[in-house]
Amino acid sequence: MAILSGHLLAAPTRNLCLQQARELLKRVHRPSDRVHLLADLGEAQIKADPTEAFKLFEQAAAAAKAETAPLRQALLLRYVAVRAAKASPQAARSFLQRAAQQAGLVESVTDRIVAFRELGAALRPLDAAAADELWDQAGADISSIAAAPVRFAALRDLAQAVADAHPERARTLFEAAVSAADEIPEGAERDLARLEMAAALAQFDVGQALHQAQLIAAPDTRAEALAQVAIRQAQLNPDGGYVIALQIDDPVQRCVALCGVVKEFATQNSSAAREVLDEASQICAQLPADQRDEARTALILAQAAVAPEQALGEASKLDDEINRETVLAAVIEALACRTPKAALHATLELDDDLLRETMLQQVLPRLVRSDPQQALEVARDIRSRSRRAATLIAMAAQLPPDSPEAPPGP
Image 1 (cartoon, helix red, strand yellow):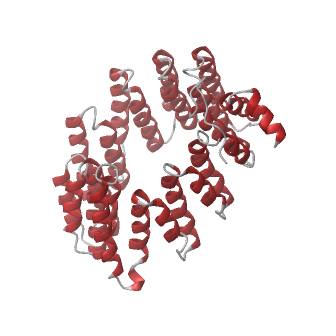
Image 2 (image 1 turned 120 degrees about the vertical axis):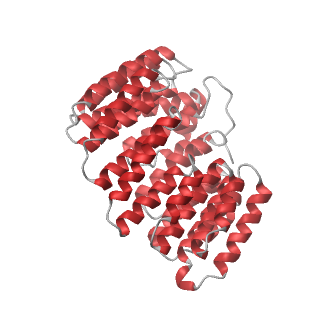
Image 3 (image 1 turned 30 degrees about the vertical axis):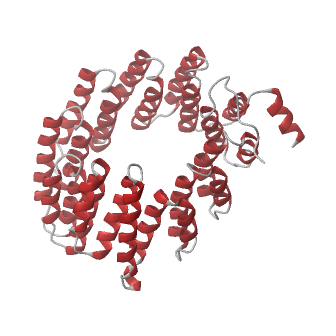
């Protein structure tokens, strides 16, 4: 403890975090981990030292060459470019051009489509014409796909990617996706495609989304699709999502949809969020015991947006261990925004080692402003070098360069 306190007195916590992350990086050898850490370091240093940041981005791009699979290398370069764009749009464009060259080498048509789609989305703010060319290449590859389910998924995803930049083009792609879904033989697979289509359309054309949901033959899947439309619509318009949720006949999915609406109201209208949460709670309470699990899980996640401390207690009572840990992680993430120390305590009680270390990456950056000493001490216990380094970088990013720091907590 005395040694750590001495370090804290000798240098700002931010610099100490970055110093420890650099030391850990020397012992990280997996190419993807090195690329991510170097790019994150660069992003953290943009304001403090733009020159060093640029060097780190160059090192990250060079490290990506160690990944021999073209798709992985292309997506790693995209990761670097997105972060470098804040400091040097020109460098970001260069990284994306290299990524596009790698994408062209991808043999799998579906993987190549993913690469062109994602690179186009990253390039759009930097070079609209070049982004459109990549999306054109993705579209050309999609037209060569014979299997209707695969073609449907590719068209749906490309439509979502281009929607903000090209609404009319997106509409054409969505229409083609609907046609591809219609080619799928009647049954569960077609119903699932229409569910996914309804969810994708919810923020683009809610009327068409509801139409696709109503075409689903299986009642359970149709109700689930309507819930997804309500939740997606609520992200744009909570009142609109609420209206759709109330129209769902299935009580489980109505509860799930209302819970999704709660999360959106929570950021805009806390009293409305609590009212809708109460409504969902009443529905859940009236469900038969054997139908309550999905609704109860949704209810706890919604409660986390309104009262995370109470949600934490409810999540700990869930019977299924895997579901309990997953829900606890989501609640802890919400709690960290309000009470980092309470979130840390809950994180340290998680049984799953990987999940615990993953959640520390979320919690410690929230804690470091109020209690840098405890944040550093806990970070030292993260066994994975790459996750510990990533956590330290995220902590440093929360501390502005040369800014006064909060005193250590009690």
